[in-house]
Length: 446
Image (cartoon, rainbow, N blue to C red):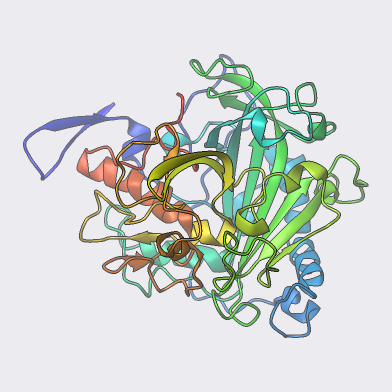
C-alpha cells in the first residue's frame, strides 16, 4: 500500500499500489504456487506511423459502407486480424502483444485479473434476456481490449507527456485512419447452463464476480467461455457521418472450425456505422434501418440482444435494460427494453476537463436528467423516442462531444468510462462516480 497526499486538502488517502501505478500489469492476485503465464501490459505506444493498408475499403470498392456491401466489409475486417486473434486465443502464453503490434490502456491494473488482464464488463446478465435459448442461470461477462499500432499512437498522445497529466486537447483524442480496437468478451456460463456455449473456447482466469455460481467474494481460478469479439475501425471514407465502423462477432457452436481455430467459429452478428437518427423506432417500429446490418445467419441467441429498433448490439453490449420513464401522467416500468446500440453507447464518449469529478456529462445510455430514483432499481430513462432520448441516437464525428463543455473522445468509451475515472481516483484520492459501475449502470459485486 502507498499513501498519496492530494492538493485538495491535507487528508491522506490510501490507495493500492496497482491503483496508483499507471503501468501496473494487473491486480497481482494469483493462485498459490501458480507458475503459468500472466498478463503483461503493452504500453510503449508508437508514433509517426504511416497510414496502413485497409483491405476492408478495397472489399467494397472504396465506396461508403451500406447494408448491401457490409458483409464483404466485415469479412475483410475479420480476415485482417485473423492471424493475431488465432494466436492470442489459442496460444496466449506465448503471444507477446507489443511484438505483435497490439497495446492496452494504462491505469487499469487494479481492475484487471492477473492471468489474461480481464475486467468485469457486465456484473449479471439475467436469464430473462435469453428466453429462447435456454439460459438456465445468469452470467457475468469479462473483457480485455487491444489497440493496433495505428490506434496506439493516440494513446501515446494522451499519456506520453505524463501519465499523471493526460493531454485532453481535442486533437490529441482523435484516432488516425486505420485505427483498430479489438475487444474480447467472455462469459461465466458454460454449456451446462447455456447450450449455446457448447464447444466454446475456455480461458482460465483469476476472477471473483460470477453471477452463474453466485459466489462473488473471493478470487479463484475459473473457466470463462469466449462469447463475443468486437472489431472497431476508424474509417471516415467508408463511414463519413461518424468515422467509425463497429463489427460484432459471436460464437456459433455450429460453425465449422478451420485453420484459424476458434476464430473461424466467431461469426458476424453485424455491423453499425451510424445511429439512423432519422428513424424513430418507437414511433415507427417497422421503419427499416440503413446504418446497421444484421447477419441473418448469426446464431439464434445473438438476435435476442439487439438494441433499439434492431440496431446492432451483442450479448455483451447491454442493449436491453429494465427502464423506468414517465408516459403521460404515470410512470412505466419496462423489463428488457431495447434502449441502446453499439454506436449510440460509444457516441457518449466525452470528458469534461473543467469538472473531472463528473467526467462524462451524459451516461452511456439514455438517462433522464433528473435521477430521482423513482423507478429504482430500473434505469431512469427519458421516454423512448422522445427528443431527449434521441440525443443518444445522433450521428456525430468523434471530435464533436455529446454535451457542450466536454472534449469528444472519438467513440473510445474505455478512455472516458474506465481509464480517466481510474486516473482521477489515483491522482486525486477521490473515488470517481463511474468507478465500480458495469456497462449497464449497476454496481459490480466484488
